[in-house]
Amino acid sequence: MKKTIYFILPTGSPPKLAYTSYGLEGFVVKEVELRARSEIHPEFRVNCIAPEETPYMQDVAGIISMDGSDIVIIESSKYPRERNSLLVLEPPIIWPRAYHPSIKDTFDKIFIPTDDFIDNRHFIKIPFPGWAPLIKEVPDFEEKKFCCLINSNKGSPYTGYELYSERRKIITNFMNYTQEFDLYGNWQGIACWKGWANHTPDVMKNYKFSISYENMTNQRGYISEKIHNSISAQCIPIYLGATNITDYIPKECFIDRRNFSSDRELYDFLRSIDRKTFENYIEAQKKYINSPQAKIFKSYYSARIVTENFIDSLKEKN
Image (tube, rainbow, N blue to C red):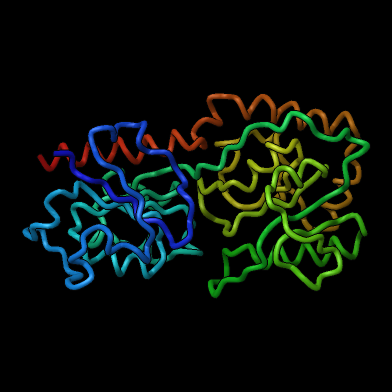
């Protein structure tokens, strides 16, 4: 009889990665929302403790939680540690507890999207699966609007490395410099707000530039979908985030915010970019997006890391 692998998703979250094609064919794979985790076994409604000897855990090969929030970590502690894995797709500024050394008391494997903390035993690097294919039909350079920012309006209690405040700062400054700056997301009430973007690249393709700041800086290797959405749209991202971004994405593909002393200097530089310079960036993006260098940000690559490590872990236990 096949054993079952459960993927616990945040409530209301769609599946993020396709796992079954990469080494899990010998298992029954089920996705369970966090609020419905009792579906793993009916007994969970009565007894939330699942020690190794509990009979109803014997057909469970593993439980992979795709959320690093406190509630998931607390609930996961009720499962046997050796069958628990955690997939973290946010940086420490969002889910700090998921990066604390004590997380190893609850999870045997913790897959994280940064280069820091990695020990290849418990903490394993999984690149954020943010790659997106190139949109082929986009407006001409002269038809594109100037610049946009597409993000949720959020904040963080953690100061120092968060970039939410930097987003708000550049919004304020660019609004003072030009009326050709557009804002999408939950920024209602701000003059340049244009509504919501249902599919980010489809909106970005209408702009020459996008503000593509991560949620956090000073993290090596944490590169989310933000820069890839812009590249997909043939829009030049202004990037701030991973300190080693050029180890992953060629510098010719984006504008590095760190190269400018102020938003005003950045703005003046953007205004100086002509068609030829713009097209040079786009050509570099086209080369990158289909290169071996970019494939690590594809979903199948991340899925393979998770499944291969999971299978190897089972072999070690047997």
